[in-house]
Length: 75
Image (cartoon, rainbow, N blue to C red; front, top):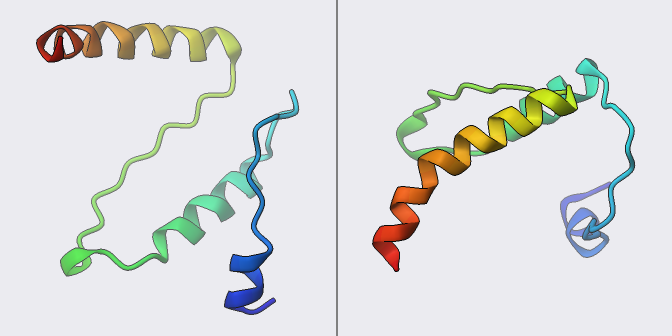
């Protein structure tokens, strides 16, 4: 598939299946994303992959607590 074919055939996903994604696929996706050009070749990325639903909810609660004060400032 060439670049233009990939662009013109892209799809938007709004519904997701409740299936786990293998570590191999996650690594391929991250590797593909790291191939994108960056300013001044700066790539100081860190990734956290969370698969357990309880862990996901804990992380979301942590993020919400950190964002709430900033949202209050915007109000």
